[in-house]
Length: 256
Length: 381
Ligand SMILES: Nc1ncnc2c1ncn2[C@@H]1O[C@H](COP(=O)(O)OP(=O)(O)OP(=O)(O)O)[C@@H](O)[C@H]1O
Ligand SMILES: [Mg+2]
Image 1 (tube, rainbow over the protein chains, first blue to last red):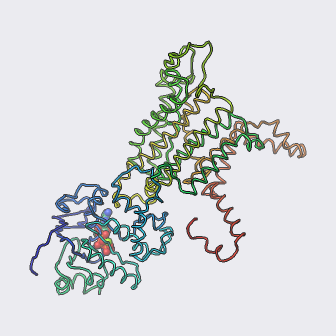
Image 2 (image 1 turned 90 degrees about the vertical axis):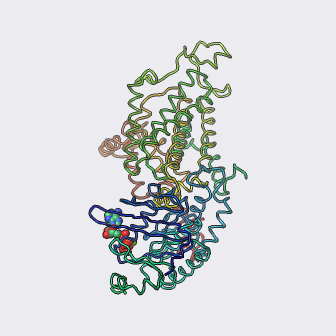
Image 3 (image 1 turned 90 degrees about the horizontal axis):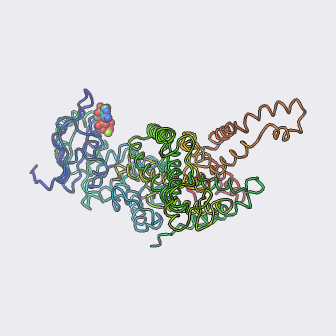
């Protein structure tokens, strides 16, 4: 209730996004504080993924701007936005299906070390022992070390998501965007993922998470924004949001 | 720390490959292909295909215009012979530089698109180069007649040290003429170096980035990579390989014609790569050898030879068989090539290399029977 404003890392300021006649995002104003986990919930088609797409530079907003750490993101290329410290897990995993799990995780680590472009042909990849060890440790963390030599495309849906999460985490991003990271996972895998996300929380990484699973939302989020038909209809702490009648009506009441 | 390092497996591949290439004059004898002219072509087109595969095999960008760089390499080499020296080293260096610049310009524009649009753009540029060479730029390319050496060429470097000879000079390396078996060995050594560099690219972080671009370009963007310069670098490298191959064509036969840049020549390197096995190092080499071999063998056949081959058939049947097969040899050898290509793509989409892999895995499974055979889906190695 008290506005103890921490350091705002991400500010989505007055963003509108129209797809033809569809007003997918209207008047979105969102502030995410350093180190917090900010959940975005809302019914299907509310505009949650569109919001992440605007933040990450995949879509340009029709108006408004996104500011990260004092820098305007709007108009920048996705790779520049990533290099500034924002990583994203997609709703449908974006992974390198025909490369091995280990290589999938080494590649983002190389992006962090070498930047957006480096013509590096002198040292063989297998001699990149530092990067390799880091990737193996990361895979250990997400419980996938034993599958490191498999082709990523042959993983189960849940494992693909976990691997994609590892690909993002190995970059040590300052801001991590997660679009339904536990969708398609068994209850057991969901719990492991929650534990993992809690562990990162203690490391101080800021996270924006979209999630349908209320169990996940309420066990992770510091703040929740509720999106319905492109508008934020409520935000606040989990308790505030849980008690909000508008939210009950738009989302929680109907679906759960 | 050691910049020449290759992983063990690749080092062995290189050693075996070197052995195979350098002993060509021996093992090609039973195939009737052990004469220098053909072996030079084997080595030169292997360079072309290996370089092409750095682009197509790793990044998945399918260029239909790489013959343009082959042609540029040849023209540059012949001009270097004419203006500077008959030594082949400067010709190779300039050819690589100039074709690299062409690739930079063409790649810069073409890589703004991907998929089929990229392919069409490269094809369009290559046809433009062909037309420029054929008609517009005749002062530089000598158009239809092809660019050739003449007795009165300036050759400034050569003529500083020696008198102008009576006859037409020929390309040389360290005083050694570039013809016959010696030329084959020179070209073979260049092939081995080019192959080694391609190996370095394949096992490097850079090579992994190119594979990742082929696998999922979107993920690359959201992982912080600027993919355009990666693809452009691969394009320029493959253009330089093509230019090098072009200069060697000129070194072994100092003549450069526009037909070298035609779209059929661009298509040929695509066929070589796919036939042998896209994305493998050895595959394109095998593809190049097979195509050059068949081109030579099939195009050399005539009706009389066919009658001889089928002389064991009764006269009537013999005429029919010869009438049919004659369409597939001589001038029509490309019909045979097309047929082989279709068969490979339909039955072995991974090319000859996939065939070899399948064959050797059958062999392995037979030797070590048991549960390992059933679980063969797990990773290679
Ligand atoms: N690129 C696009 N072009 C046109 N319409 C789009 C585009 N992307 C999203 N939309 C529309 O915008 C609306 C919001 O979509 P969005 O994917 O953001 O919803 P969501 O909240 O993520 O839903 P879900 O929970 O199903 O993932 C939907 O009506 C969708 O059809
Ligand atoms: Mg969504």
